Amino acid sequence: MLKLFTMLLTLVISCPATALAGVPDAGRQAQLLYLLKHDCGSCHGMTRKGGLGPALLPENLHDFPPEFLVTTILDGRPGTPMPPWRGELSEADARWLVEALNRGEGL
Amino acid sequence: MKLPGRKGVRSLFHFLHVSMTVPLRMMKKGSDPFPFLLLVFFCSFYGTANAECLVRGTGDLGIVIERASGSVQVVDTTAKTSLFRVEGLGDLSHASAVFSRDARYAYVFGRDGGLSKIDLLCGSLVKRVVQAGNSIGGAISQDGTLVAVSNYTPGGVKVFDAQTLAQVADLPAADEAGSLSKVVGLVDAPGQRFVYTLYDAGEIRSVDMHDPDKPQMQRFRDIGRLPYDALITPDGRYYIAGLFGEDGLAMLDLWQPQQGVRRILDNYGKGEEKLPVYKMPHLEGWAIAGRQAFLPAVGRHEVLVVDSDSWKEAGRIAVHGQPVFVVAQPDGRRVWVNFAHPLNDTVQVIDTRSLQVIHTLRPGKGVLHMEFTPRGEAVWISVRDADTVQVYDTASFKLLAELPAEKPSGIFFTSRAHRTGL
Image (cartoon, rainbow over all chains, first blue to last red; front, side):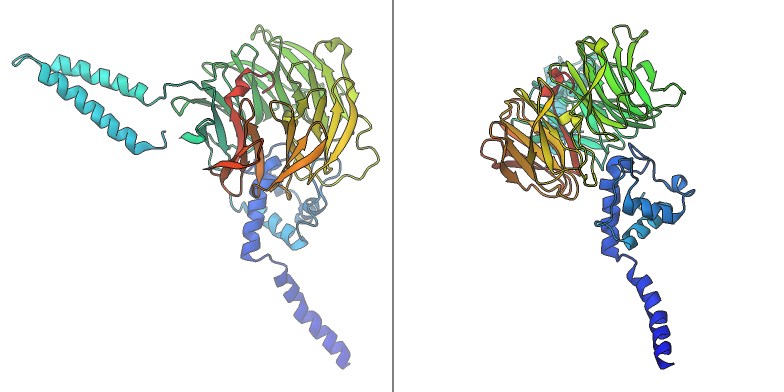
């Protein structure tokens, strides 16, 4: 019983902790916005209005579930020039980027 | 706008002071000074309008794109200095430029559809038109009278009078079903032609612009999937498109267009695992040195060597990362390579005789472009993250000069004015 209680307690404590650990810190966020502007920008435009790749403005993304966008960033889109960024970006990075894109942050 | 402004203003005041007072002193007492003063006044303005511009040749000038601030610097490659900064050019991500054939004007193609004409001697923006929603580059015609821009939105090519920037032709890139395709790889070709590729439709088009009212178009369909860029060989004969969706390249012999497009290097990359491509290679930079062409491999840390007679693979050179630009020195002796994110802090130099990497430079993070002086004694390299342009001696690899620039990307020198496809 005590064992179960400890397990539950660990779960309760660790869940919010992972969620907190999952948000990139301010320094990382600045790196991500720089990457977004200059590296994603080579195909999607520095102002996110699109290029060889599609536009990434909030109005272009609202129809897509965030999960789909996170997967697109991490695993790319096979058959298109969109590369997988896994390895370079963590899941938390990708999630934050999708939120930033939907907010139109840094525009 | 001139960068060293103070001196200019002081000399202007001095000029006005002398030009107004000396003639007044020379005038006879009692005569009406007004008409004479008026004349001197207008003459002095006429004089200053010219004094703002440089009186010199432009053969050793060029421009550096400052991609994030929507500006360009006019640079002098002999003095290795910046002469002017020209602002107000809009979104210059992925911007490129061509030159008028008198090499006085640069035409800058911005991402936001802006076409800007810059006077290199006056450091001024002569005219700017926003001709589309989203653009990728352009070309100037063989005779220098027409400037063409390739557009993503709306997909197609628009052609402008090089002098006035008035539109003379609109060539929508519609496929059979009527939907518009993004246009890539627009170049000029002999015979007053523009040649370009439809990214979505997988088609090459060659347009004769002798009569801008009646463009004569040849179409070459089914060239392969997702052609992402193209180049024309320096002699203007072969037009080659890179395919993202398939292995191999699509080649059109413009001397024998009736033979259609053929696939070259079609074994290249087959059955091999490719790395993620974080930046598409630029085919405009394909280097041709003697009989060999040096091409960036897509998704591989390799430069591909191709025999430019048979168009068969002649070797591969292992390099630091995925190549973006592979450019030959004007003498063809060495080929310089920069790399895609995240290995974009390095430049490597390949000897074209031994096919060996003979030198590695580390200019800094975000090396975006390299441009040689007309006869190749120096190379200018833009280093985006360091906000600098570095000038290297191509023989000793010594750093000769460094110029501050805001997020520099493309570097374009006026020697391009007299070369097909640039």
